[in-house]
Amino acid sequence: MPVMEKLKIFVVQEPVVAASCLIAGVGLFLPAVVRPILDSFETSKQVQQPAISDVVAGVRKKQA
Image 1 (cartoon, rainbow, N blue to C red):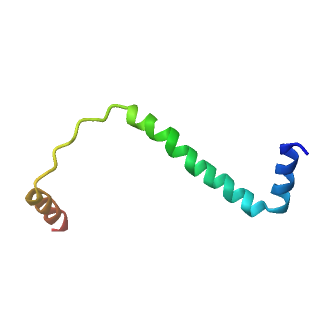
Image 2 (tube, rainbow, N blue to C red):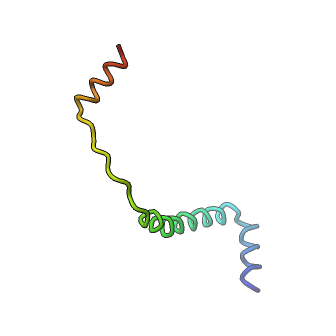
Image 3 (cartoon, rainbow, N blue to C red):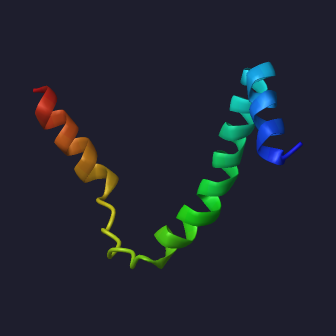
């Protein structure tokens, strides 16, 4: 029996298991492909973090 026929029978008999295997396959495939693509992009310049006192002052102005 060819593999595709066995696969079709398996999907019909066990649809939940087949869907779970498909989701797991996508979960393994995406990080292996997407992460190198994202890493290849240049990262933008880091924005300097504001001083905490400036943040607190800004929050207090909005509340008043």
